[in-house]
Image: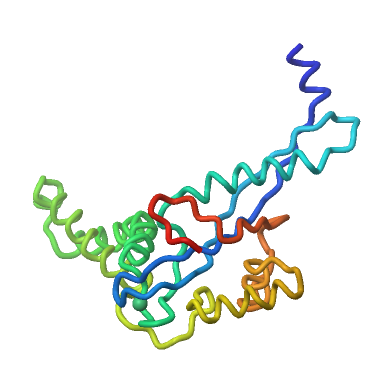
Length: 215
Ligand SMILES: [Zn+2]
């Protein structure tokens, strides 16, 4: 039965980009804003090998994936359009995501520095190991601070976020043209393209995280 199933049933994988607009209240200036969060995922479609796949199944699967993602807290990053700052959790997330790679890179540099500055006997002792790990961590933290998103006020404009007034304008425009506001925002206002995904799915303003702001 297993072999027959393998012969008859075909699985198709579709790289999907999920788009979602999330409304939050900035914890710096206490004003609300909405930003676009994206997430890459794979949607699978199961079909009979000799029968054309049913697009409805794929859509269902994509939607199921999207719903799971809509429940995840603290996704995406964008500047608050009012005070031009990132939320602290966005800064922290960016730094944590960079830490493993930065640590691995700086371990090599720390090894070189330590091997030139410490004598061989100390180098092979517990103290030598502690110095190596400590130096690696300090260097990694510096690199993370340089490469990650910076806290504090930024001067640049960030198209990933909109205040309520701009958002209302976008929604109004899209009601006239019957377009999806999140797709218009991402592909037209931000000028993004689908490069690493075969399809995009807009979750609109669906934010199922606990305590989410009503859109
Ligand atoms: Zn703010």
